[in-house]
Length: 412
Image 1 (cartoon, rainbow, N blue to C red):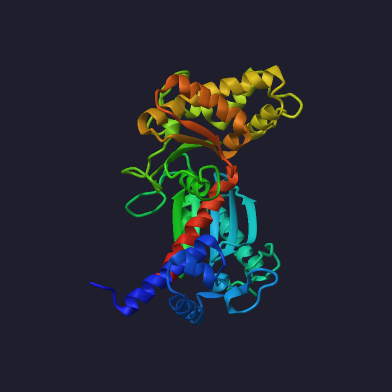
Image 2 (cartoon, rainbow, N blue to C red):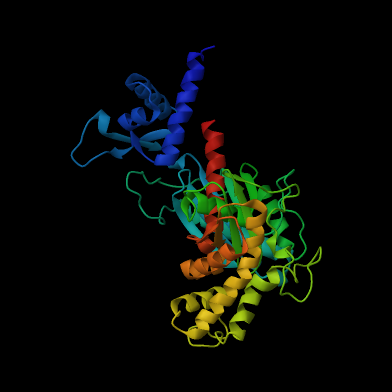
């Protein structure tokens, strides 16, 4: 049964909007080519979407071209505004963007959890408020060719969607951050406070590693793949499982809790409430620093006693002519291979991304070493790639999630 004229128009409108989301501003001719629709049909949908306030003319294609066929149309960015948060153990970072993802303001602040849950939450909420007000001044964010800069952002409290990335488990039934041992109480309270202060906004919470995987697939190291595992290497250890383009969260939301994986080389076994003795004890930031000390790396020039795990790994990669750096990278690769080999044997993802600050800092030097060891340990082929986005992947993933949700709601 053929679609009714109104249904056909709605389908064509959604198709055009999805293309503008993915490709950016397009001419009517380009929309015709990409959609396969007739010229009159494209002209009608452009007129319809423009009248509805969903798209607008943002420029012309080509320096010498003029006329209707050269007009570039893009999604109206200030139709809605979004916020993305990266909530860490002792800090919060936030960015505010328009509907097309153009960043208008960014800020971060350390959080003193010792001050109590209430003050910690207020400090984080105040950061979001300041970022939204700063975005409203129109004084931040670079100009983007072909996209009109909005005059202002709506007032605080009028955000359409807020995407939050946080450590810990997300309840797959409710979408809420679960009360997880070892995480500060202000994390869960922050989510509730934002929902209370932003009653008209949709607040979406996702595990930080899952968001990093989404960002790496869309904008980073695995844009050519829809099946892979991202291994998050930072203060804590985690993994995100992406199969056929979909995140796999598990029955309880705990898929990828690789820090609890029992591995050889630790002093014991992990427990239900403590990952010490698991893979975390070999690959977490504290363990990486201890390994650097054992290899004679920590305390050297460029990798001083106060250096972070990321800084130490970055120094070693930049100093591979130093025998201590080589010894450290080889030993770290041996450790990481234990966790990666388990993932490869269980899921056969074909590709593993070394993410987080340590994974990005290790670059190809570390990734190649891990891949060489996996080739000896597993009959299954597995490419190992370093993260492109590193620590910034969580915030980017939170923004992409907010952007997708808002566009789905507005575009139908």
